[in-house]
Image (cartoon, rainbow, N blue to C red):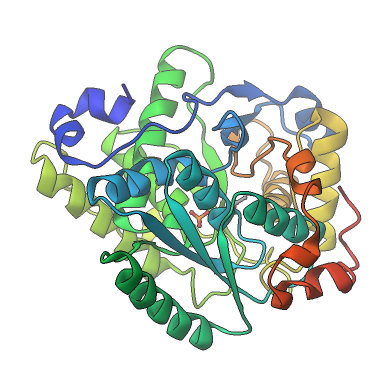
Length: 366
Ligand SMILES: *Cc1c(COP(=O)(O)O)cnc(C)c1O
């Protein structure tokens, strides 16, 4: 049973949940990378291995979100994201395992090899793919597709929120802090001073911040901003934490109702670069350093920028004696064989651009 349900059995009765991943994910020390960057106590949380065939941070959220889809007897799920969205791919992957059809509403983004791979794999998983140039047309078409599929099946598809970061999806990362606490108790890792994690729609970091406080752990989460400030900022983070806390308290009154203020939120800026999914030199250097030292595969949109922030802090803030935890949010299971069996011409025409145009200049680290 997952640690959150062990501690709060009422939540087990009331929350929709379906087991999809492989938990707990390993936590271990990174001696070589630590030495390379000047940290004597650097650890990694391997959420890249959260699923047998497809991992990454979205699996924890989907255990609740797809649990809800099953509970409401949906036949289809609809997810939204950018063209290379790991979230939409994860949704397509686990929806298919559960016999649900998935629809992905995707938006224009800078080109990269991982975008191509994710699109091919989504097609392989029989996801229905739609492409839009901007948010407005994506939202309008999303409403249209929900209605249209609703008419076809007499039931609306289950809407999966952006990044899976509704309060319900965020509960997946409240549970993740309970999982980390068990690993600390077993001596697998000392209690971290700082936890670095990529932050997009913030469900990952918000769930961790809430869970750690509920457990009286003092680790500070450093959410590294990898998308425009419109989407990730302190007020939004506080709102998501508080909505998730309310959800848990409303289902089980023994779950603590906690107060959070701006001091609890330490969003790290300055590593996004020009914009979302446009790689930075510091980010790709960090990807290379992780790969050369530890053989762990990161990428340029989220985890590279996050590790770059950690490295920069170690250099400038004298963190050499602090226990640092890098929370790896990127899937590292290899699906290239399945993806290679798809010819991109089979995808809807609007996606061909990602295969016919060059990838961005910094995407040389595969
Ligand atoms: C989606 C994603 C994130 C962002 O997580 P949020 O919960 O949306 O903040 C980080 N890393 C990777 C690899 C992702 O795919």
